[in-house]
Length: 332
Image (cartoon, rainbow, N blue to C red; front, side, top):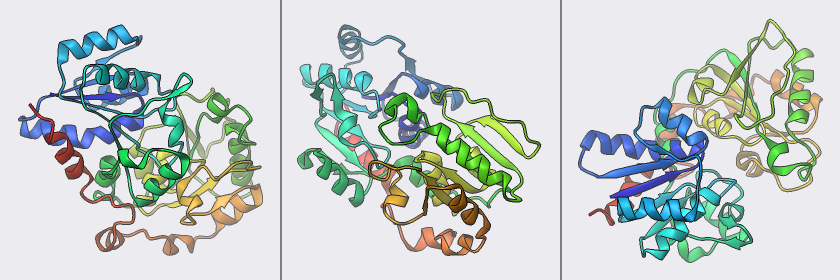
């Protein structure tokens, strides 16, 4: 039996394509133990799971004794405690372990537990860029296996036409970084709204992260405020502006116009696509206004189905199969 441990929304998304494939086959035994926002995702998608609110080494040890998995695969969250306890307890019982990284950021920090680094037996990377960045940060190269990103692969292969809205998507920077970055989500929203009010942009969709502090958005007939709705936000949009979120990656894969706002940047660029020069990084109101006015950027972005058929920029094609093949080595 394969045990999946998911701690955040994006971690659940990563696993889901394989779970759907196995559910159709009905041949592989699996279980999901979830915490935090990943419980929300599993409920939304009607996938059976066990949600844990309180975690301890004894609780995890008991779960492992009861389930007797042949492999434990975990997500890697900003708060790694949930996953780290499963890795530690599984290793005590000589159960093989693996963890996946679902985004190109904070590689080494994902494995910090207390004052130590807790690594699984295997670490799944997305593509060659992530391998380089992971090893540069200090993740042991001998643990890394290039698997891909199953959820991004699924999205890339199901492109839909652009919507009619500008999507603004934020993150809880203040909660996790305090003032270390030189800016937080308040700066992001201030810049966005100043720019919007100086242009003729209509139909603005704003989504905020579940862990972001509530912000009292000014009412405007052209602006609709929602909590994030995942892929539906991208369906409804033609442009995605954020800081460094999964929704921005999804927008890029679907050919939306994408930009990252990172004002007063003190550290390295948080967003992989702007870090690699694939989309613009904006710092000021005037830069955002200029970006919004340049309709020709739609044509310059690799945005069509033909692009996805001709090249696989992030080595996404085959992600689900590679993950499945790894898991099948450990089936009963």
